[in-house]
Length: 131
Image (cartoon, rainbow, N blue to C red; front, side):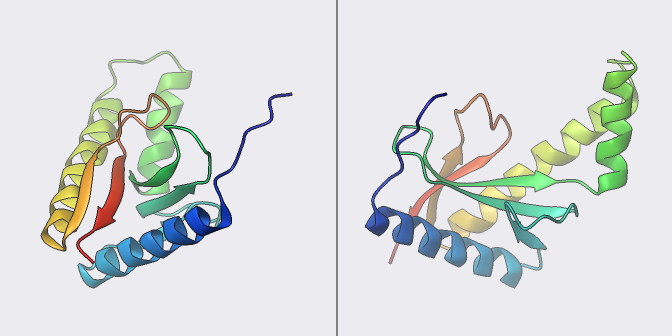
C-alpha cells in the first residue's frame, strides 16, 4: 500500500478557502456546483480539493454533464461503440463547459489553467485569486 503525504493544515485550510471562493463565484454566475465527496451525482461544476503534497495537489474544477448523458456515453463505451455520437457530444459538452468555467473564473480574478494531470484531462486547475 502506498502512503501518500498530505499537505500541512495551513495549506489544507488555504485550499479549502480557495475552493469555497470558487464555489461562490460559479454560483454567482448561475452555475450549479458541488464539492467532490458530497455523494451526489448531478450536473454541474464539481470542485475537488486534492490534499496531496505533490504536483497533483490543489483545487480543480471539472464539469459533470447530466447523469443521463454521462450514462449514455458510458454505456456506448462499455458496448465498444467508440464512434457513437453520444460519446463525441458528451466530450464536447465537457470541453465547452471547461472553457466557460475558465472564462468566468478568470473574469472574477482567479488564476487558472487547464489541468495537465492525466487523471483530470478536462479539468481546470485554480491557483489562486487576486486577493
